[in-house]
Length: 184
Image (cartoon, rainbow, N blue to C red):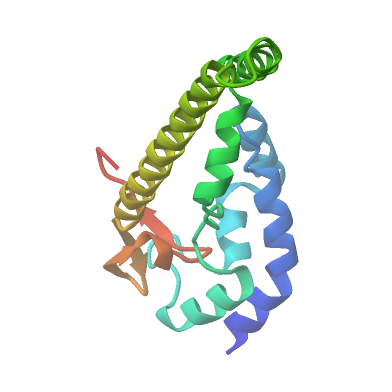
């Protein structure tokens, strides 16, 4: 297929141009770079996309192979142990732990039989707070991931081979004409 060969040849130029016209928070610079590259018509030509018909259905697999899928890598989930360790970064908890250690040392020095009780009680309270905080953070992260997965499961309308198709966001490929409606 000659269109696929041209797409293969243009892949590096497409990636470079994409970086130029996608500067975060810089609309004027992005528009300037797009105009310098020849404007929307030149971009469509480079992508092998027809402004009215979109990309050919036959080129979708090749585009996905060349440019990858339209998914963001998910961040690795923190384990309960990591979240537990992170709770000790809290300044108040650090002060309480130091106070518990000082209380333990002074208590054992003053009364070796029962002097450790107050310091151990403070340490136990710190441990309970850390476990509860880590559990809460773990549950919140689980809920966030569930909501995020549901949000990522949205459908969009694209034009391919002159027809409108409703597809998952993950199925968008480089060169797709995406139809944006109010609320999208």
